[in-house]
Length: 362
Image (cartoon, rainbow, N blue to C red; front, side, top):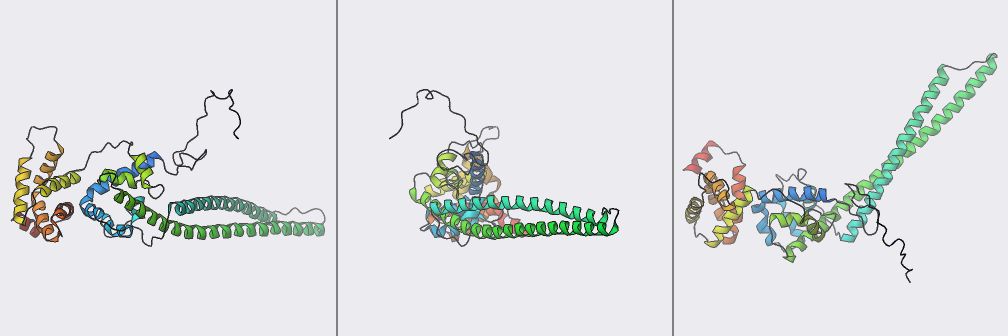
């Protein structure tokens, strides 16, 4: 049974819990939070910008994914030329090869074991530094003993004392050198264990992150857009998608939707309403819509639709080329806006030759 309530301490103010930016909660009841709100916000913002830029590349595939194992292929277009080193930790985890079975429990156990091993390795490094200082001190003492011996009046007794002194100092140097080598061997052993554990943990984290993303997509609780997707993925693989979404949702996001995502929404909105039957009809429909929504010259505050129309009008020749390139690639009519948006974004950031510019304008 629980003891009686201490009425004397009932109204006593609770002591504030000390927090650290990198480890917000390191003591108290419950599991510690290993990722701060600041880091979550940075991760979420970076993911929003990446997804808005690449939304045409991945959105259609994510809507039709059938298995968690297929997510690596669906998100492969997020990397440029297969280089994932420049991407954030979340995307790197999702695109990592060799994923193994990783449940939340296994991932947490591996993470705890990895952090404990890092602490042991840090302690071993401190021991190496300490033994190196002691060995350096002994070597200096041995050099002084050899160069400046204290010779008493009797030369024979002086030589014996000097020999004994050198023997003692040499013995100390040998012991400290042996201890120093043992410290290094221990650190190397811990480093090998850390690398093996890190490799195993990363594979478990990759499987866990893909499973969490698949659960988010299958739940259909939130609309699939760059903001919601980034909220769900920002905390992976440290926390699950539900906790990540719950913590990221109230965090402020000052940046509005990018012009690339506004263009995607413009194309999706109007091409799904009236689906063109041919490439020429698609060009005509989009040209008319862009002209209709072009902003006036004296307008200061533009709506998202007018901003997208102005951007598409400025890059109309690239959009025409994207229509010609993407039209035969769509497997069904609803996929056309996604492919068109992806090709249009790629065309904007690809260097075109003079011949391509001439053909596009003709």
